[in-house]
Length: 435
Image (cartoon, rainbow, N blue to C red; front, side, top):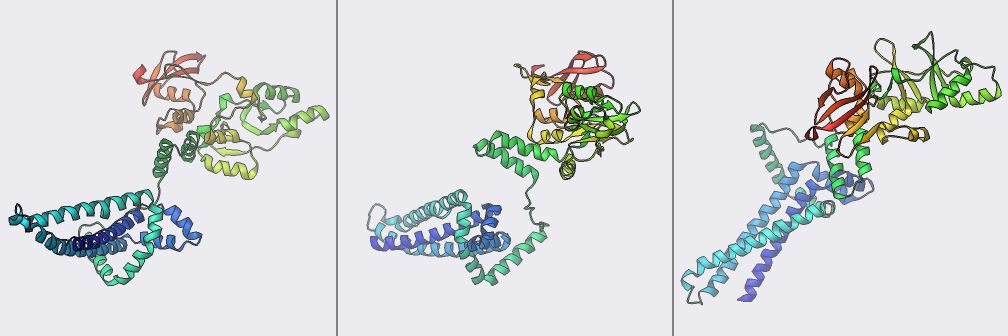
């Protein structure tokens, strides 16, 4: 008697394991990382290629898996409900206390046992394993599903057509978009950061790369009022003094008392040897031709142009043909990797200082786009009308500010704390909660 029950239970258990294989395969194939499977398939992994083939046709995959699960469920019910129930009922009839209810009790016990085993062996454990090892499970069982799909092709075709027909009636015929978006990558990066697999500097670099494509020359340039430039008739010694004083390796050169008549740039590497070897030369003799860029050109394209032409400095031209500022290769690279400080920058007063109360003391000449990224604030739709943080304050007020004036910006309040004549020198950016 017990041997017969054990045999029947063994059959049911095998069927439930088979059910678990199908359940795990289905979940693994839809959860597996496509990029890894593609790499393995490209390396000659036949199983990975089969898994990719199955994942490309989810309707056929679901039909194949469902056929397998349905057949197994049918066989399990037949064996479990009929055979084991009959055997257990005979045994219970020998117990006087329950003999009257032997058939009902036997059926209830069988249903409970098979339900428990079905949940644990046929669903929960296999699916947990599939989630933990999606790529491996998908590769392992892909050949089985390919074989079953070929064997049951007519049934798969009929089920696929039937389900598609019902979906059309429900107006649900569009395939889901499987492309990876920018938001998907950022979400995975943040999840990796939370899980410890992505470092903080790596997360920031990826965020900067995506922000990079949205920025223009105007957003990163040094505005014209802050540009250090020299006239074409400036002596070489005076030009060298300016370059050393400000720590610049390149300086724009102009004529007719206006930067709008820019002639080019002078490189300190050309200037110093000339001072030593031939003092009779002038700026015109060592002048390099200028590079002009439009203020609304994307910096992603400009980086390629700078690299291709060996350019390190460009003059930014506005829509009226006037010089709006200068853009350097360092400006572009800093947008990707953060602030790049050299020996001159280290001796300067910090332009962005975080205070103990959570507020920020910031130089008004700092780029608005840079501060927006640092504070994780959305850049405004009208941010093309200004470049600096000071420009943002002026645009918000609609006039020249006075010390003590403040404007709201998202979760922050921006207050002017120091004016240098008509120029906004320092601003205090503090959270609204602390205001």
